Length: 348
Image (cartoon, rainbow, N blue to C red; front, top):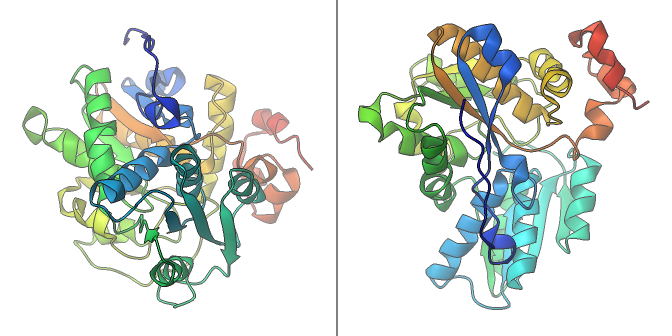
């Protein structure tokens, strides 16, 4: 068991509080597999998610190369958490923040962005190939606005670099260099690529790095078929993960992946409830998907291994869905939750 430690020094504002999150030992799942399974508690970042790291890294890179100047504007197309991280950093640094996002995202995220002072512009959820896609609208607005910078989270590799410099080294240190595998889902590809690249450089490249993928994404089939991109079809309850293409961030590492796991929505929603019941952790669906993948990878690799993953954020931004009996029924997910766990679905 890793020893518990505390941050004893002060930090410089919001940006100084990003990173250095705990690595949580998941006792129940570890006991089931005979391995040690850990989740990086990224919900403890000051903005509440793993995306605080990417937001800060991208903005600092734009400042360093002179594209972002005092009083400037940050523009992004985001499904939620990156926008929240950017809005926080913009408030801390004095920048204007404009967010384009699909109108399918949870109301909690939209409301929070507006409370943080962001100019939120929900647009129809259309494929990336469509010029009305939220990413393209963000890019075009930035091009037309003086002093604006499109942060381009999907293809700006400052995203992956932030995780290479911070998240990866933290996991290596927190496991005392004994990590055997890392598995995570991906939207932009920054977390998986950055952490994966760092861990692969340690211990002679023996650390395995796996992709976890939800329904509706093409990445699992891409990895398992030897690099064949298929037509995207279907959808998932998870927000902000899954992809229909290889982003620049993921492209920096995808050929070094050791494998991929496809995780159903049924498994993810069940894990949301199991983590609350057995670990007291209140997490979102993408976090639960990552933990399911860590559990399945531990089973696949055999006992005695140390498996790490990312707990991306908490359930607070999704609770009106994940814990709503009516919403679960509308998605055909009620039966995915064991009877003894249904007591947590307290919303109508």
